[in-house]
Amino acid sequence: MANEVNFPPVFLSTDEIKLQVSRRAKRGQIRKIGPRLYTTNVSDDPAAVIRRNVWEVVGLLFPDTVVGYRTALEGKPSPEGTVNLVGGYDRLLELPGLTVRQIKGPGPLEGDTPFVGRLWLASRARALLESLRPSRATVAGARGLPREEIERMVERIVRVALEDGANELRDLARRVSPKLEAEKEFHTLNDIIGTILGSQTGPLTAPTAVARGAGEPYDSDRLERFQALHAALVTWVETPRPAPFESGTAFQNAAFVDAYFSNYIEGTEFGVDEAREIVFEGRIPEQRPADAHDVLGTYRVASSRDEMTTSVADPRRDFADFLQILRRRHEVIMSARPDKNPGEFKTRANFAGNTAFVAPELVVGTLRRGFEICRSLQGPFVRAAFMLFLVSEVHPFLDGNGRVARVMTNAELISGDQRRVIIPTVYREDYVLALRALTRQGRTDAYLRMLDRAQELVSRIDFQDLDHALEVLRRANAFADPSEARLILPPREEAAWS
Image (cartoon, rainbow, N blue to C red):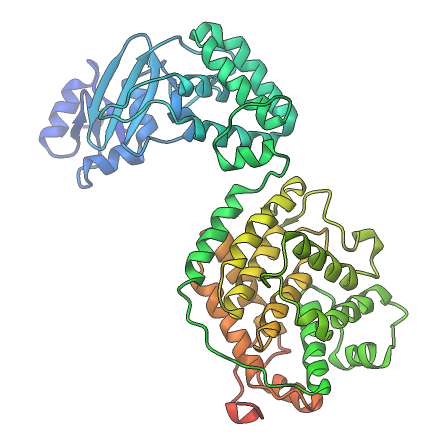
């Protein structure tokens, strides 16, 4: 027993260990799940075991082959559960939950890289050429991909690796195509790359490729998120929170609170009394003039009835109007920071932690697609919710994106005679986490509940008397650190308009 082999989760039986394999299989310690293929997992479904160890299994059964065709491009088995390999002869092997299809072709070529175990992974250039090769679908599924999907992949390469990356891809494809006997496929790929780059003309079908070829590319990943949010918004039932005609004082006071918190959560931190002096008395602290002007600029937009009753979803407005409004509001908010190019879209990438926002060259195209979706929504709350995510997700400016996003949001609400949304300090983590969950996991529920609660807070406060409004906010923990308290909605009787 001391000399028994310690088997890995999946392994092949060989002449050297076949006796031990036989004994342990009889004892129920291992079991067979394929030709000479065994596992030490004797409880789970064999298909599940193979899926968890797919590349180890393929490497054991098909050593020295190249993972190619669509499998190399997608990095996983096809929807039919098929892995496509290139080897010395044609072969098809059915395993529980997995089909392995070996296609006759050359071994590793220039650009191919070592993969798991004794496998090789085809270069993207090689895999694209293979996937463009005509083939008929079988029960194992197509080994290649439709041309539209190839176009979409090439557009993404151009988006990430830029023109130099596309040219490197094309050069490698040109060199390996003769060895693959894929000269015809190279000409097709060359036409796709050239048309997407705009250096030649030709037919394209993938929307992202067509847009880039026409000179207005967009971020397709973001578009998917916009569409997911739109699907949730069309079924959302709005809670009417009308804003009866507010006196000039109440409107200005609500705008002050809006501007104060909008800057505070972005790190522009003033005491509320100091902020009141900045906004209502024109006092600019000598040590922090730019920060003070950030608060003042936000207030100027948030307190302007003309701005805040202008909806970009008005059918009389077009995309050019939307861009003009967005840039104008940003210019006012960031007027004291010329180094941030107020009113001008970014020319370099921006990030939040590990999240990369929309690339500069994709900003206009992505905003256009988002604008088109937003205009289809009915109701001020759902338009506002979409607008907040659109501007936050694109992040079209170097700085000030959060502030301008919230201004754009509240303009949709106020122009629809609904209460604005205010994100107090204590609610910052709820706000950020809800946006992040929508960005990373496509979760719309938390995002919409967050906004709904933020609007409900405002609907319970009478802003006619600023001191009273601030006291209600203090009792609601609005000014507290989110790590120390939670937002408590004030009772409805606090609000004169409840």
